Length: 219
Image (cartoon, rainbow, N blue to C red):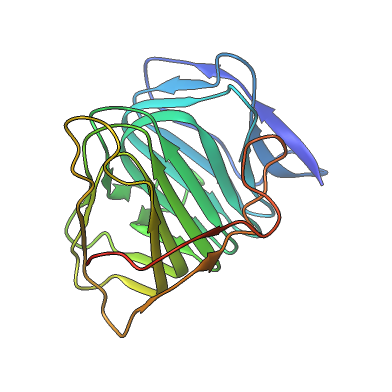
C-alpha cells in the first residue's frame, strides 16, 4: 500500500485525520524533523502506522496511535510522557528518554478514536533505552498475544486488568541507576517463554526474521 508521509514541527497538538487521502493506507512518520508536539494522535484506519529511520516522535504530553488494519512500528528514539496505542496486528514502541513514560489514555479528537492503554492483536515489544521505569495509569491495561519487555530500565505494569498470553524480557538493568526490576500483574494464567518477533520487521532497524527474546525472568 502507499504510505502517507508525515513531517510535523509544532509546539501545540497534532492530530492526523483518518481516513488518509485516497489510495493511501499506511501512515509513515518521515524526515529528520519527525514529529514534535505537545500531544500527538496518529490514526490509519485502513493500514499501519510506521516510522522512517531517524524520524523520531517527541510529545511532551500524550502520544496516541491507532492502526485499524495493520501494525504500529515505531522503533526510533522517541520521547513521550504518555503512550496509548491499539493495532490489529503487532506493536513495537521504543522510548529514549531518561524520564520514562506511562501507559495511559489518548482522548478522542476529531476523527481520532479515544484509546486507553495498549492493545495488539499479535505481539507487543516495548523497548526503552532510558533509566526510568515504564509505568501504567489505573485502568490503562495492556492486552496482547505476547509481550516482550526490552531495554535498560525496569517496568512497573501492575494493573489487574492486563491480559497477555506470554511474557519475555531481555537486557534489563544495564545502565547505572537502573536495576531493571519487572513488576507485572496479569489477569489470567501467564506463560514465561521464548517469543517469536518475526512479525516485527522494519528494514534496517534491527529486528527481522526469527529473532527471539528468551525467558525466564523474575516476576
